Amino acid sequence: MKPSVLVAGAGPTGLTAALELARADHDVMIVDAKPSGANTSRAAVIHARTLEVLEPSGVTSELIERGLKVSTFTVRDRDRSLLSIGFGNLDTAYPYTLMLSQAETESVLVSALADHGVAVRRPARVVGVSQRLTGVQAMLEDGSVVAADYLVAADGAQSTVRDALGIPFTGGTYDESFVLADVRLTGGMPRDQVFLFFSPAGLVVVAPLPGGFHRVVATVDEAPESPGIEFVQSILDTRGPVQQPASVQQVLWGSRFRVHHRVADRFGEDRILLVGDAAHVHSPAGGQGMNLGIEDGSLAAAAVDLAAAGHPDAMSRYATDRPQVAASVVSLADRLTRLATAPHIVRPVRNTAIGLLDHSSRFKDTLAQQLAGLSRGVA
Image (tube, rainbow, N blue to C red):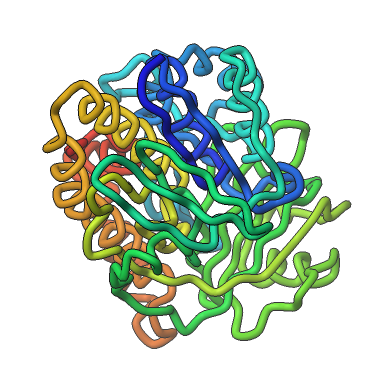
């Protein structure tokens, strides 16, 4: 058995890191502050690059079996189509976006970990860390101490590990409030496309999910804590299609949130690495967050494995180089968000410009590559 690794956080990012480390025959402990796994859909977009990253772990085929393939992202102004981004020409075995709830993604990863004899310890929150030349000590909320050779911190945007290391988390917060709901719809919403409606009233994204549901995400001045049928319907009535309107029949769950855009100055120190939301947070525009985090988890696990084999510079390279990749993704999400939330007075000009871009195959292919995660480096 190779050296021991503690993974803090059992979202998709932490689970991916733990699975890769277990596959490499490390002694892995994974802890999570939540008493149980995700029970809502939250992140629901799995891009092509992520399916490629997860291939060696053997979970990609099951994710595809459970998910819903989407071939096109379409930007519209109510009934007027502005821009259509297709994924069919991507140079990958997965020329599409896969829609699947985060709960399902986590379930697949937890099951794969169990096959390697690793279970998530819950609830167990890391509240402090210290490092020595030969390892890491992590104090848990119950007062117990876990000793390990390495630590991978996937403990979210409020990461206690990142704070303990004193690593700045640089960025800011958008003014807009966002509302999210998973709903059952009737009406003219095809289930093979993700729609971004850039209406005069504001942005709304409508994306299909398995099981006959749709994800609705919208910017609002002040979102209710638990958006119900009437609230979601009002958003679709004022921003969605007119000729074939969508009718909300059921709200499976809903929430509100504010969006931050931050990147840690470095993604680790000595024997500790940061991954996922502990290292970067940004707008949900383009569905990049979970995908970038899963990629982090895989690369951090590889860096730990190399370090354990006598190449400690692998961890320092990850910690110093990976923020550049994250910053480029955060920048893309920021541009998409600011485009979508442009002031009312400039929206007609914005929509005209977007419509013109629909005639550029080069632009559309480049954007498809960026959204799929196939164009960025993986340092």
